[in-house]
Amino acid sequence: MIVRKFIKKFSSLFFILVLAAVLLFFLDVYNVLDFPRNIFYSFSSPIQKGFISAAKTISSSFNFLISLKNLSSENKNLKTTNTRLLAENIYFRDIVQENKILKEQLGINSNGKFTAVSAKLTGRDPLEFGSFFWIDKGEFSGVKINMPVIAAGIYSDDFNGEGGFLLGRITEVEQKSSKVLALTNFDSKVNAIIRREKKEIVGGIVRGGYGFNLVMDLVPTQNRIFEGDIALTSGKDGLYPEGLVIGSVAEIINKDNQIFQKVKVSPIINMNELDTVFIISL
Amino acid sequence: MSILYRGLLFFIVIFQVTFVSYISIFGAIPNLALIFLLFLVIFKEYREALVDAFLAGLFIDLFSSLPFGITIISLLATVSAINFLSRNIFSKPNVIIVGIIGALGTLIYKFILIGEIKFFDFFHFSGISYNFLPSLWGEVFYNAILLIGVYLLFRKFSKN
Image (cartoon, rainbow over all chains, first blue to last red; front, top):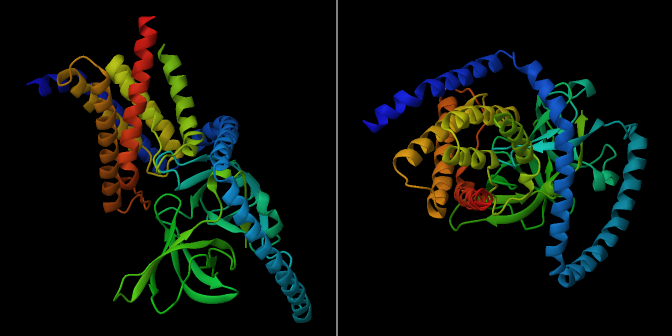
C-alpha cells in the first residue's frame, strides 16, 4: 500500500527523467551530442586544468610530508641506485655510439621514427580512476583514435623518437580534447616482452589489472622472471611502437605444479605526478 | 536556490574528475556528486533532488566511458530508493541513520550501475568493462563518513 501510494505520488517526474536519459542515449549513439559535448569541454577544460594543478600541488606536498619519515633509508637506496645507474649509463653510452655507427652503415635514419604532440592532463574517469584520462588536445591538433600516449616531462631526455613510457592509447577524439584508455584499464591489452639486461625472457599480453596495476597472464613457468625485470612493447600488435617501457615486474605468482605463472607489472610512471603527455603517431 | 545547487553540482563533478581522483585511499575515492544528492534527498525536496540527480548524471556521463545515460538512470534510481527508505523506514535523521543512508545509497548506486553495464555487455553495446567490486567497500565507507560529516556541518550551521 505504502509502495503503491509512493509510486503514484512521485513516479511521473522519475519516469520523465528516465525517458530523457534513454533519449540522450540514442542521441549519443547517432552522434547528435557531439556539438554540445564539444562546447561543454571547451568551457570546462580551463577549470579542469586549474583543479588538476591544485590537486598535484597538494598531493605532492602531502607526499613530501609522508616521505620525510623514510628519508634516511630512501637516501641510502638512492645512493646505491645512483652508483648502479652511473655504471649503466657509461655502458649505454657506448651502446648508443655503436648503434649510431651501425645505423649509419646500414643507412637507417634514426630520427623521425614517430612524431609527437604534447598535451596536458585535464581529468580522470569519474567512475574508476585508473581507467581513463582526458587530455587537452584533439582533432584540431591532429589527434586520431588509437594513437599511443606516452609520458613526457621529467622523462623528456628519453624521448627522442626512441623509448618513452607508455600510458595508453586514444579512444575518443573531440575537437579540442581526447579520451585516453589507460594501460591499467581492464580492456587495455598490449603485446609485450619482458627483458633483462637487453635479453628477451618471454613475450605475451600485458593487460590492465585493478587500480594502477598491470598483469601478464599465462607465462610458462620455465621462463625465469625476476622482480625488477622490465616489460616493453613488442610492436607486434601494430598499435604501439616497439621498445616503449610498460613497467617493471613487481610480483611473480607461481603456484606449485602449475605450468603457467602470473606476472604483476607495476607502471614506472606515477599517474599522480603526471602533467604533460605526448601523443605519438607512427 | 536551485540554480545555486545546479552550479555547485557542475563544480562538484569537475572536482570529482580532477581533484578527487588524487585522494584515493586503498584504491577507493569518494563520490561527491552522490553524497551531495543523498544529502538533498534527506534534507531537501525529493523532486528537486531528482532533477539534480539527472543533471549530475549528465555531467558524469560526459566524462565517463559508459554509454550515455547509464549514470543518470543509476542516480535517479538511487535517489528514488533512498527517498522511499528515508520517508517510510528510517526515523528522524541522526548520525547513524545518515551513515546507513550513505552506505546504502552507494551500494544501490553501484549495483544498479553494474546491472546496467551487464545489460549493455549482453547486447555487446558498451565494449567497456569496469571493475567496481574491489573498491566497493572502501567507497561505501568513504561516502558514509563524508555524508555524516556533511550532516554534522549542516546541523551545526542550521542551529546557528
